[in-house]
Amino acid sequence: MKIAMWSGPRNISTAMMYAFAARPDFAVWDEPFYAPYLAASGSDHPMRDQIIATHEADPIAVAARCSGAIPLGKKHFYMKHMPLHMLEGFPLDWAADCVNVHLIRHPARVIASYAAKREQPTLDDIGFRQQLELYLKFPGPVLESTDIRRDPKAMLTALCKAIDLDWDPAMLHWPAGPKPFDGVWATHWYGAVHLSTGFAEKEGDLPLLEPDMAQLAQQALPYYDALRAFKL
Image 1 (cartoon, rainbow, N blue to C red):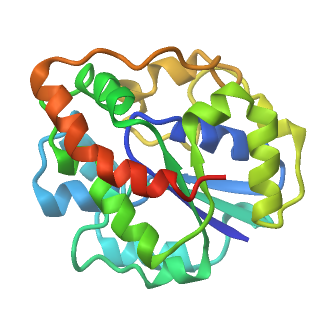
Image 2 (image 1 turned 90 degrees about the vertical axis):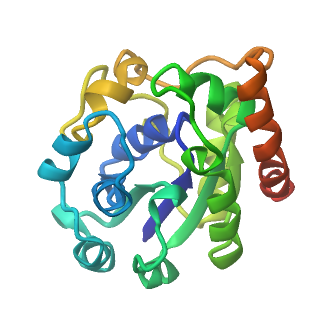
C-alpha cells in the first residue's frame, strides 16, 4: 500500500509521519515536492537554497519515485505531501495509485502557528484552496488534527479501518529527536515535534488573531468547512 497524506502546513503532519514510521512495515518520505515547488515558484521560504540543493528539485523525477518501488524493502509506503506544493504542470498521475488521505486543521490554528515561523502568510501559503481542489480529484478519508489530538488511538484506529490497514499500537509513540528521514528543513520547522514522543494533548480554544490574519482565516474558512464535511 502507498499512502499519500495531504496536509497544509502547521498541522500535525510531521507527527503523523512519525506515527507511520514507527511501524516496522512502513517506509516514509517527507514532503517530496517541497524542493520542486521552491525551485519552480521562487517562493522565499526559510532555508530555500539549502532545500533545493539537498533534495531532488525535478518534479518529474520526484513523481517517478512516487510511482516506483517501495523503499527499504518495506510492505507499505507513507508519503507526506502538501497540496500547495503541487504547482500547475507537476505530475499527479502517480496519486491515482495511492490511498489518498486528507488531514485538516482550523485555519485560525494554522495561521497562528505559521505566522510565528514565517511572516505574513497568504491564502496560497496555507494551502486550503489547493487541498479542496486536490480532494475533488483524489478523494479519501479526511481527518481533523483536533480529533486526533483528543483521542489518537481512536482516530488512528478508525483511519486504519477506513483504508483496510491492520492497526498497530506502535503508531502512538516514537523516540524524541530528529529522524533520519526528516527533510533538511526540519531544523526550522520541527522543533516542537522533535521534543515529542507521541501526539500532543488536546487543543484549547481557537487563538485570537491580528485583524489581517483574522481576515485571512475568514478567506480560508469555506475551503476548510467543505473538507470538514467529509471527515471521519
